[in-house]
Length: 224
Image (tube, rainbow, N blue to C red):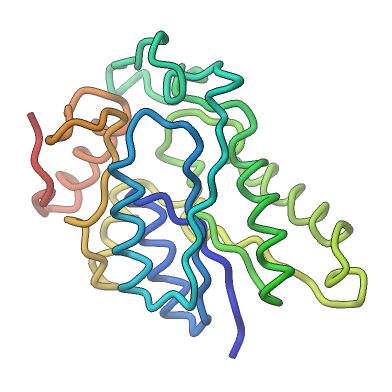
């Protein structure tokens, strides 16, 4: 059976991505990064999603990017922005974590080599997102090119694909895809704040709420 490493955060996009990998017939190995983010709510949900996609092994990888700071997701002294929907994506927001996807994919690549995976799945999207530079197709293509020069596996003639099934989808299209694949949205979390209920005000909440509204279904999580 072909194998894939899935990067799972506990968020909506990565959950849909992992269900797509499962549907495509991959034996799945999941990895979640505990990188010094503001809360661990997503970490707990990532464990549940991993079980539901029947992950062969789920690794929670400790990596403290808060030592660098530079992002409101890892430094509580920096305020999380609350931009109007029409302004989201027009500039790189404070929630951008420097080089995060580069770091995550590099560790995912090491894991993929160890388990002899054929692909790495990551739930990035370049259409309906917050303006992060490491979610763009040109970044993914460049990383894949580098990955296939970097490991023992790839220099022996095998290739590792970086799979981004959501990259050209809007949040509405992602939610509709999740519905078709029976993704349990109630077990996902998008809010940048880790309170009992989602804030409904941060950029991530606003994009999620608009996506559900346009998809014609109610978001199953609770908002303040």
